[in-house]
Length: 134
Image (cartoon, rainbow, N blue to C red; front, side):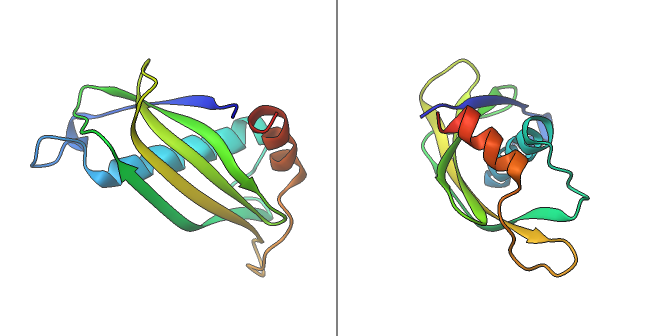
């Protein structure tokens, strides 16, 4: 599966009282990576008439990480539907191939006014097909 890697630098305050990165930071990394990719590569306007709402997410943790490590989110697509995209999001230490966590996000695209599902925007669909499914 083709993937696009998005860097995510950790900060001192990302460590929790147990001395490793708190689980919520992994969700921030995934959300930031996917939305940055959709804005930069697919032309999605987060304040536009179509928005991607996260309707499901999960993360499995395989190894602890602590600041000052740098992470990368390897953006991939598990499923491209009519109104949704399910992202496959391994999180790696920068430069490594073995994930320290594996996440999933499902975005449903909705009309900003009605909040009813609409087709995946053409720019997103095209970018996914060209960069992440080819």
